[in-house]
Length: 470
View 1 (tube, rainbow, N blue to C red):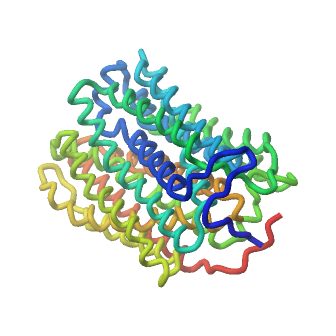
View 2 (cartoon, rainbow, N blue to C red; view 1 turned 180 degrees about the vertical axis):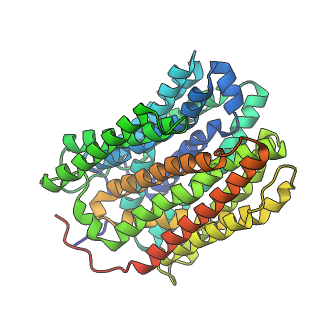
View 3 (cartoon, rainbow, N blue to C red; view 1 turned 135 degrees about the vertical axis):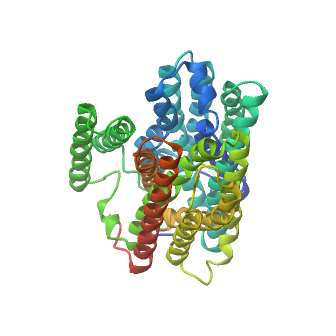
């Protein structure tokens, strides 16, 4: 049976100093904000970044996608490491690694160097996200946890809102490299604050390093996302087929390995927990049906409406800004409505907002998008808050970082698939602006249908007594 962590963090066996629950919320929330701002960095500066790195069309795809590869490939692994070897330790290491990788990106002489730096940034962000949410899950219970996970989820929306604005402004002020120096400057005090103020916490019974699980899971996800990225330049290329087969083999091997290990990285028995299924599938659908289409919308606004990067960022901040507000307020509803029902409501609102944006056409009026962006933003915030809560509540109390890793892995794999789907649909015509707008409208409909499907699953799957953790 799942045990509950204390409401306030306790000093660790490693001798970490506990400064109370405030640090256990503020530091992970700040890290999530920085990680998401950095995640969105190239969205409004791709042209300048590609020109500075002399990057061709294929390299530009990697510039946009590389951080997702680093994130998704190691999220589950670092979540397990955080639970076993110390959440503060993994979190602090992630902040240090983010600083180093940001310096590499800022100094990158070419696209290959930059892409490598972004992959490492993704791995560092994975440690911040999984370790940070694990720290919150350990430090808070009951209504306090609902508030804390709501704040953490709100940082996802705020980071997406502020990231494009910050990078566009810094690029206009100096050049695109300035953001990566700023990220380095922010990551260093974050590492210091984590080391000095966060209490250490870890699982009561460490399971040890599941090396076969780490290799097969990370390799399989990396092969899948690499195939998706390369597929955007041609799905019939032999390399894409080889990578897809490799992904299937490695992920299949991961399932076999985890089923046979005494102490697996991901206990497959969690799939019998309805809330774990709802949380994981909900995160996958959020990435696929919401993040995917919203990530591409900025490109359409630039091409079809002729908006500047700063104007595009401001318009999209209606969605991400309301997502931030809704996530903060979601805790007020959890006492009366089950989290899975609120998750379903968020996905439905996202679908309604996407449908409201239908009718995109070159030369149209951008203000027609505002109602849809607003409704979708409220839905996204509600979903983010509930996913953060379900990620830690759907697993045993001492596996909060692993739950966060599994949830965020699903989110970013879904986001990569979603972007690939939207790009394939939107650019599948004759490449005229009319065809681009028509394809984006179709992608909005498909995304809305997928979001509604995720909402139905969240409502249909019923909670039941969790099986005894092994």
